[in-house]
Every structure is written in structure tokens, then in C-alpha cells.
Amino acid sequence: MLSTLFIVSIQSIVWGQVQSKVVPLTALPAGLVYKGKPLQALQFQDQTGDYVALTTETTTLEDQAHLAAYVYTSNASMLWQLRDGISDCPLDRVAVFVPGSFKVTDLNKNGKAELWVAYRIGCRGDVSPSELKIIMHEGTTKYAMRGMGKLKVGNAVQPDGGIMTSNGFRKSTFERYAEQLWKAYLVEVME
Image (cartoon, rainbow, N blue to C red; front, side, top):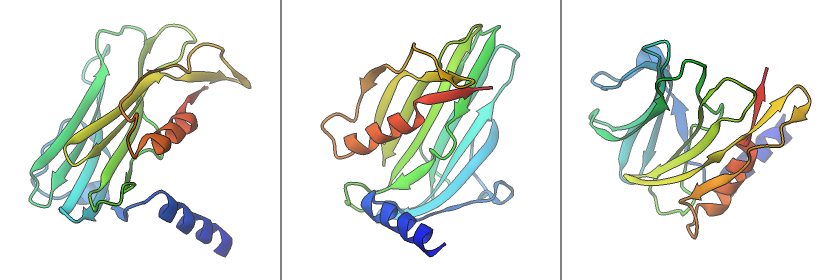
């Protein structure tokens, strides 16, 4: 157990993790304006203030699925929001956050938190990969990495996909970390 704690502590130091705590969805601060069903909430602090981050999902019609992420200041003012999804899809809709991707760092050690989230979206009627997006905000500055993921069915990883189509992290302090996240999140397991 101690060795596990030590490894986690080293990873936090190496990757500049900012302490954050999970906010129970039943205890969301009053005044937060959002759409959809809350999925996960985090509270964190950096040199600019105290914040609450929230992810939500919305499925209003049979052919739609939407995701959103928000960051609010301590007085419940929205700092930024991310909204994406699938509309007009009569087939199988994919709109899911990658488990474990909602995190806070300070990789460039400037005292400003970076909030990360990764998700998959797609409309498919066959065995094909979804689009994979990794989004990071430092304050109101947005960075994004987008492309096609890979799909694992049974024990086999399908040959198509795995292509990064845009990388807004290039030549930034965050590039290496974002690329490691891309590799970690690339394969979607289809059951």
C-alpha cells in the first residue's frame, strides 16, 4: 500500500497535479447554470481563485446525445463551457467522457490550473471507431487534440482509426502530457 501511495505521489509531482476534490452531485453549489444531467464535479484552487468544474450529459431526443463541461468561479459565474455532441443520428450514438480524464494540473507551474477532459463522439451503424477529443483549458485559453480513436472488439483491435487530425498542443508545455493522454485513451473497448 505504501509503495502505491509513493508512486501516486511521484506521478502528481512529475505531472504537476493540482489538488482537487470530488464534489458530490447532491452538494453542487447553488447558482450553477448548466444543461443536462450532472456526471462529475470537482473543486479546485489556484493562484487566481477557487473553482468548481462540472461535466454533464443530455439526451433530449432519440437521435441526439450531447456532452458539456463547465468551470465556475467561487461566486457561481461561468468562466468557460464546452459543448459537443451528436444530432440527427438514427443509428448508435456515442457521446461519452473517457473515464478518469477529468483532472486538474499545473504542468507549466505558473500557478494557473489546467482542466483536462477527454471524450468520444460518433454516429455509427457498424464496427467503426469514434472521434476522440482531448480538451484542456488554462483559464479561458483552450487547447485541443482531435482525431479518430481505435476500436477493440473482443481481443482484436480494429486496423482503422488511431489518426490524430489536429493537435493544438504543439510546441506548448503541455504537448508531451497531451500525447501521453492520447495514447492512453486511444482504444475504445466495444462490448
